[in-house]
Image (cartoon, rainbow, N blue to C red):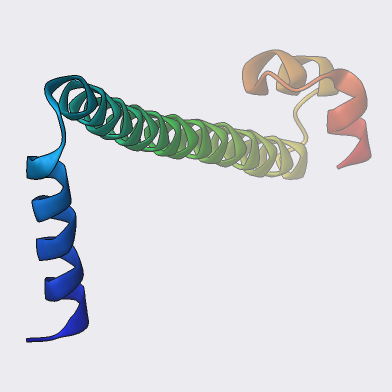
Length: 99
């Protein structure tokens, strides 16, 4: 028999031989440890999901901005007024001039 199995058997034997109060305290401790592990797992999963959602949102915003810049550059090449480009693209006039 390997050592981890023997250790678990010894722990179980010790537990079963304890008095009622000690057994109750042991069971409460085990429940607490289980609940704590569940809370940590839940919080970790929730945090990861929030992080992914935030990353997607930032990526979309960055893509939208890049598209607005691309459109503004095309409009500049066509000779359209800066104020009109700014209005159409959502960029400021200073940003359009900087392109």
